[in-house]
Image (cartoon, rainbow, N blue to C red; front, side):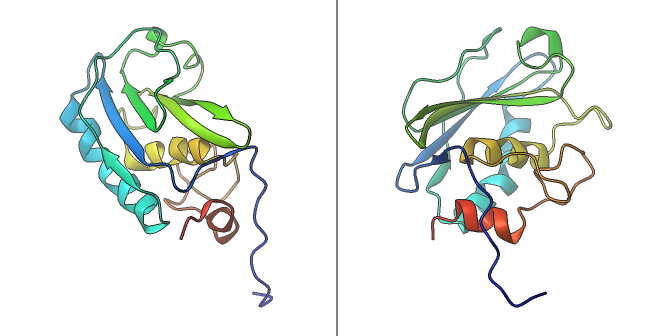
Length: 165
């Protein structure tokens, strides 16, 4: 370590720190709402530790070809084990769509297929996609790595870029 503070990674936008985030599960084929809620435990607690007002709200109906949410503060986590149901999932396991206004994120929809290696939904995949909602891009060696074998948290620079404490 150089003793210098971590330089914040640039973000193209970020979730407004004062904007509550209500995450609503939408269970598609092969997944239950309870599974989604269980896997949201770690990401929700992690984001709370960074100062975000995050809650898991009531489930919403899963929709094929889900559009990005337009309700301010809402993050829909749509999970399916049938990748071809959602545009954006072709050739990848997860994707985050975010509505923004200026430099602030207002609402988002996260589309997730099961982990291609294990067949399971995992909290680190959800945290990775929530990182995109916060404005982070891909970064090797962190949870924002495109590898599913990455660590399960943001590095110091990523934390500095999205910290709301």
